[in-house]
Length: 203
Image (cartoon, rainbow, N blue to C red; front, side):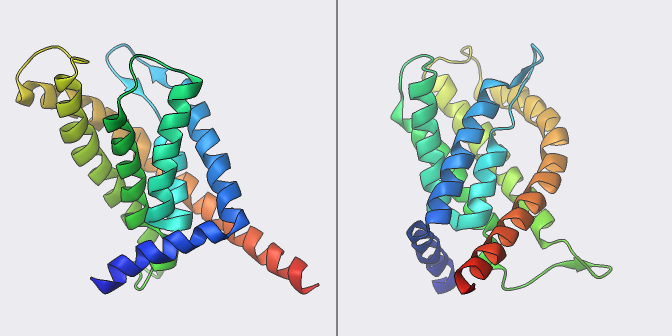
């Protein structure tokens, strides 16, 4: 339990790094751009903005992930306001960033999962993070909120869950492979940047 709370403290210390602030700002901007180009298939709207927030959580942990989720939602609304501003949805966006930070923070790998000598820890963590996000945030919390505020038709909660479950199941088909590609690539780039920065300082 102590190590769990230490992870939040360690993540908060990331804010001292200029690289953290810069990368987080860039990734928040990327998430907003992706949000603008979501794919609408009439019966389902596919959006990959979560990938950028997941990358923030992976690189800098749950505290920075929480901030990125909150900031991204507020800035996104200010840039493209649609409907009333509801603070509860900002908190939900922050919670999503926190989930990815808790599950993916790469500096918190005290153990690894290997299959045939290949480290698959990040992939397993990515699947767990996305499933928690989909089940808890998208299906349960957002469904309740959308019904409460009248954004989806009045109907039984179980029926609304069933409709949204089908939608999210379709999205997962694309979400998981994208996480498997994007997150390792971002991590490699970040580590190379760190090495390059250390070499520059020592030169």
